Length: 399
Ligand SMILES: Cc1cc2nc3c(=O)[nH]c(=O)nc-3n(C[C@H](O)[C@H](O)[C@H](O)COP(=O)(O)OP(=O)(O)OC[C@H]3O[C@@H](n4cnc5c(N)ncnc54)[C@H](O)[C@@H]3O)c2cc1C
Image (cartoon, rainbow, N blue to C red; front, side):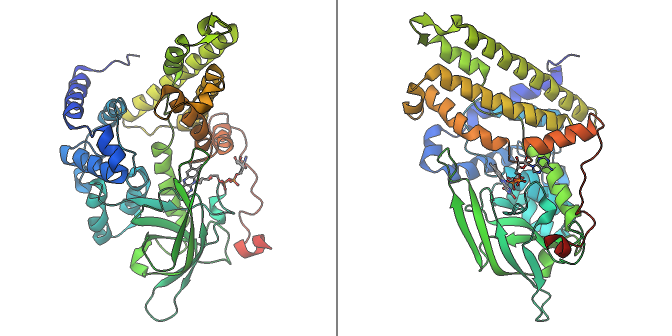
């Protein structure tokens, strides 16, 4: 297998590099207005044909290839970029609208979202429904006043970016008397609607990135329904399939950064690099990184051939998250107590922040255990999990 760029891909990479050099938003601009900078960056990419590169022209995208998208993502990650506030919208919500919304809704949302004019959030998880998402209890009941409107009440949790979002997609229970997968209905929702209260949750890395969202008789017109009444699970499965592409992979400092950092440090007067345990752990990280790289190359090969990637997405998520956590843990060992007290912006602070951020990746977009269930069933051919409540009416299962 040859993983180097073809001449055509190399030319595209050179074009991307040149555009990035000329158009990047500076770190100062990002610090001054992080949300404004994120919107401006998305608008610039959209204008140049570098946003959602694989989207067809009908969706307002440039209709490029998966390989072009991967090349752009790789090059973009090399320098400073604003936080990506659009991943949930463009990676999950808009594809869900493209699957289930009417043409008027698509016209209203798809192109503006692409240009960074809208931030979206995904209102799926609840205190009693995460891995078992079909157990959502947020209820959507008919307003009963002849308008056809719905009144939505309940609680969502872990809703990333809800505090910044203009719109969201929300999974609700519209019928409690049928089995759990059958009584669900999905809507898009205006996050500024009366009856919505958003309470940020601060993560252990100090960032308030996700939220509790309380809904009290929020009125949603029937025109905002996505898919048929009671068919919300089918729509949610589409969102989750897109989520698997959007979430995953690795981020933050890797073994190369750790090696560079360790070269500068000493242990008991000796060079850190001559310390046996450290060398063995670094070698383990290198092996993991290579395994991830080749698994990713399998995904790229499948995409380039027009196939859908298989369960390797789950393998990449489980191992990628473990790699991020192990890099951060080993970095803290190298840093010692200094690691906890280092200045913001320093390499040490980057590792410290990574140590506090990476455990969340084990959970977001499907926990390690759920990914392992997928691998067990789809790769190893083990029998599926027993789900005793699957065919029982949801309200009976509650009692
Ligand atoms: C950073 C971050 C961002 C998030 N953003 C969003 C968002 O924007 N929108 C949204 O809707 N949600 C979001 N979530 C929520 C996320 O989808 C859920 O946390 C996740 O699905 C797990 O659900 P849970 O927290 O309810 O844990 P549970 O499902 O209660 O799981 C608890 C533990 O039990 C294990 N477990 C559960 N079921 C099984 C099983 N069948 N087999 C083996 N083990 C099992 C799990 O692996 C876990 O260890 C986010 C989470 C994080 C961490």
